[in-house]
View 1 (cartoon, helix red, strand yellow):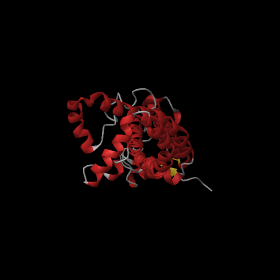
View 2 (view 1 turned 120 degrees about the vertical axis):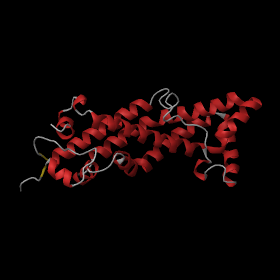
View 3 (view 1 turned 30 degrees about the vertical axis):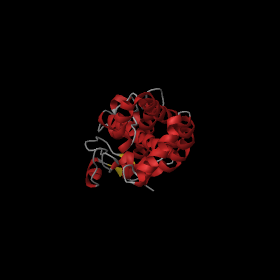
Length: 228
């Protein structure tokens, strides 16, 4: 059976956005398209893990740095004025260090997800918008990664005495609507923020690949995303 071919006209008809291949000089198969999307996803995912899963990956990056949530973040200045500044800083540092320790656990899950990408998934990503990669990974990996991250985050935050007090204070604040219920537990809050940061950085890495596929040095990325 003859393999269906992707051409620039076909992809334009499908409504291809930033992932589209308009301007491609030669057609390529669905298999090529899937291979290109897999390569782009894996490259972006591993780059994001490498950036975040190291010292100051979260703490030193204002885009993903994890603050105290809501009301407690607003109240931090009062705690500092009351002489609790070092303890507040210790908790914020511990939260971010916990995220940095957890992120490397994402590597195997992300790579497995990419390898199991179907042609239909690839087509959906090709025709998706700017957040298609983030939505794909979040849909496929958020729950299993949350389960992997939570024990690591728990061990890291338990080393800081203020974490237990955070949970007690945040629980009361949540009862008055000052903190979201899902943020009332420091371990769950950090796990959620770590995942948010991971998907954000995957999206940034993926945009770099889409903007300069030739610069990646990958033949399949040039073929599928280079428009040449």
